[in-house]
Length: 249
Image (cartoon, rainbow, N blue to C red; front, side, top):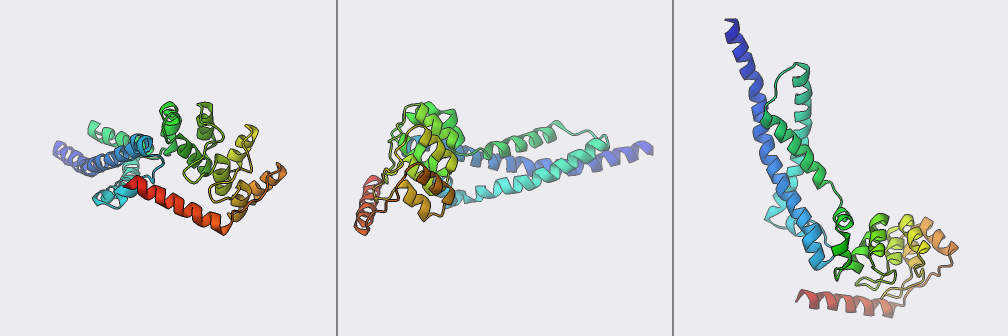
């Protein structure tokens, strides 16, 4: 009689754990598929095409359903961790499948949380030698990623590099309000008054975007606030749009 009760008890314990694995395993696979797509966009596609709106194309297609997977997997992971703690306290054995699914969920969610610039930092040589190196470095300056910007400079991308709008790293750092990037660029001797295709200077960008700390830093280092004329703005906008349309064709 006691053996029968113990057998039933073990069976009841295993059922919810099996259910967790049956739910978690497909979520791990779906999240892995999303992670693979993101890494492809952040590496090979970015090397080929330049800075990307990561996940934009996927989000506007049939694959958009994949963006639910990390959210659902995060909820699953919380439930699984609580279940694990309870099982360990009660000294209940957990199957290898359960541990594998739990470990895979933690790893894939951690992997997916890596910033896009991580791959640029790790594989800096191919990125710095690509035709899009200037655009990438200048985009990282706008994001305030001082470490990756420094890596690009150390691997030969010049301080004078400009992106498709004619902006230098100093301009985008000012527009993005990144004081740390601006300080690093200034220490390397970047031109703080270099205007972009619109005729605007870094100090104009910082002031226009309300980044007073960066604006004060620029003024203290002799920067001049220069704003392009309306004619310059119109001409630059037309030229940039025409160039993008030509590239897409």
